[in-house]
Image 1 (cartoon, rainbow, N blue to C red):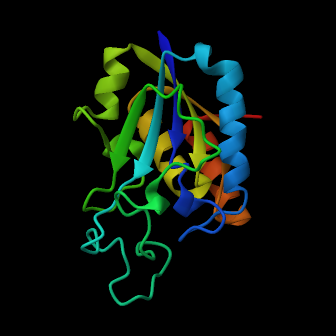
Image 2 (image 1 turned 90 degrees about the horizontal axis):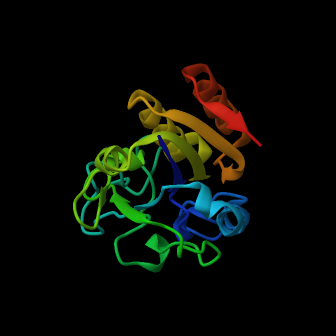
Image 3 (image 1 turned 45 degrees about the vertical axis):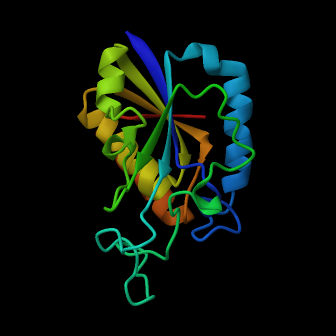
Length: 191
């Protein structure tokens, strides 16, 4: 059975200086590119996701309507489709990515399983079509979208490894809690 790499939300708005910038995000973007340069041939499928929100509405309450985000379920405006903030970080070399996924189109979405490719396929359809049994996960943010994507991969019956050197989280406490939750759910944490 095959192996896939998920690269979750390595976007300008989730790296330093972005609307929801994560400390270490730019370094993770570069580290993922370095990893792909050395290891891309180990994967049958490489899926990269992007938050891709509609800028004209609150995206199902995902954007704080009153301008006061709670940073749990409502957030500042970020990753608006077609904006510089929604672009992949320039240090992330996407040349080896086989499938690009947009998620959060008009609704809140954390897991890349909630997105679709340009041709309309779900991630589950892509994985099934390629016989993928194992998934490695990298990206931003450990405590939100990386966590949700890894949990959904486990729930979908895949063996999951989280590549700890290739993730960055919003806060150390919540990132550590997310990694512990993933390990308890059956994910392998690898350095």
